[in-house]
Image 1: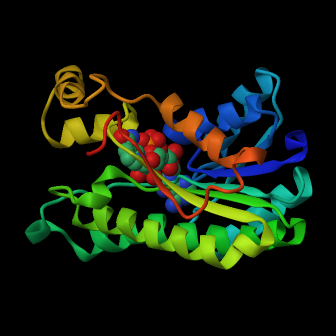
Image 2 (image 1 turned 180 degrees about the vertical axis):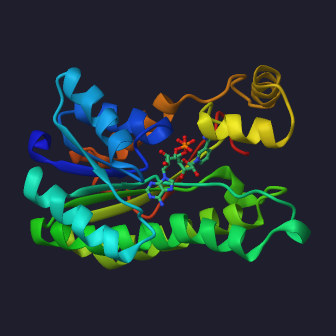
Length: 251
Ligand code: NAD
């Protein structure tokens, strides 16, 4: 049955989203990769197709209401109605509070919160029609508070409330909604953080990994595996949860 499912993953041109798109395709889902620039989304989709999966790449800014509706409509036309949505697109605009601009605040809220809202509002009708759906939103251990991330931590905490609310609203239609809160995962976003802190990437990763109870940095595949579990046909009784995938109980 899962072979007929269509999944949309936002921000899946690279990083956690790309790894998750690959994994869901391996699981037998048809996958729509949405990212800002269509060529990068298509490159990610092409890698999935080369590995034997079914995928398309669609360029769209998830924070732009005029882009979201046509992007989801293209998925409907080219792959079928989406019943899995992974809201993964994200940005950081880190700064200490006293230096944080309104632009830094609005940009982060726009992608994480408004983007997830717009995508979920648009995609949920296909799940309600199908009487089955799976929504996974990417939160973060930063939701618990993180120096230099007043905007990002607020958005990631907000996503937890957003998720719990649509778990309640959509549950009766067979739709589950859950959050994954990754800890330290090695990705391009990590590179950006190391650069911002003026640290060498390898020593930054080693230092962060040493503080993780399982003594390693997370990999994008760790997140992909958790998404795979949450969107599985058999995971229908897990809803409204926040799973910290952080190699231990805390950030
Ligand atoms: P990344 O920067 O490598 O990839 C993010 C992707 O989102 C990029 O391809 C980017 O182009 C895309 N994107 C950004 N704004 C967009 C928009 N408006 N519309 C469409 N696409 C957009 O990041 P990542 O490390 O893979 O993180 C993925 C998600 O996981 C993010 O939500 C991030 O906040 C979260 N997360 C990451 C970590 C980590 O350690 N890497 C930890 C916790 C949470």
